[in-house]
Image: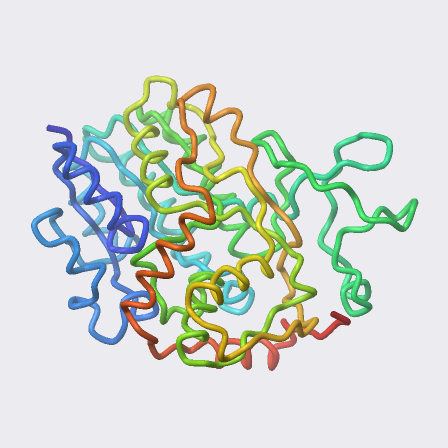
Length: 381
């Protein structure tokens, strides 16, 4: 029986992964700081934590705790490193916290593994699509291009798509593959890039096989409805249940690759077990772009339309316009194929949300804080 340590394992992805690995005969240890932002004011009784009962040994603590990490790292054959501060917008004003946990926690883990006897054979690190910044595009001459962060003046004038400065027209969106340019546009993206590169560079020197998974926008039943940084599906669902208006940023045509939680778990298990995984970096997504307005339409169709929505033209500094994954590499080398299309996954998610009912959320407060800090601006929708 292999022993797996999942850092950040009481979160949405980690708890689902822990249950799946337990069912496959793994001995699972979950290490998690149990942040109130994710688990609420009583974290030990949160649904995610309760779902681990009888499934995993829960260790309450931080990846920045040297004594605790020194103990737990010697008890694992496989590490799945999910622990991180998450949230693009929040990272832009909590820079030290994001750096301390995401970069500092990873460097501490690698330092410990380099200085004590261990049995770790493989380490899977959760990277992110945010490391790409804007996705891959094609210009009018058929060349791939990787636009820089959008200019504020363009967004203020309602020009939200990356613009070809030579022609003044928008580029053609393409799927982003793993060889695409890495140029994150947020502090969160920078920390995930450093996390990934450190693990891929240092782990082989420690006799550990590294694998990096660049997750796209993960969603599904069990995702926090109260966390204002958890993603638009949960945020919008909570607003709908409260019959509140949805504020759609930009013009609503910005798109993301939404991947259902069961597909993410399947990809992560492949990264743990497959012989072709070591030393590789893989995108994990659905391979399909979905606009924010499509998300709003699907959720309102399943949950109700009372609160309505408005396309505000507001935009956040550090946000990107488009990104969706090219899955050729993970399909060819690991046999991964996303099984849950968005129209099916969003219905499953909505059924679960309706059963949960609305939760108190700091979403409006988070937007007010970003406006106050100059990180949210208004353009023409």
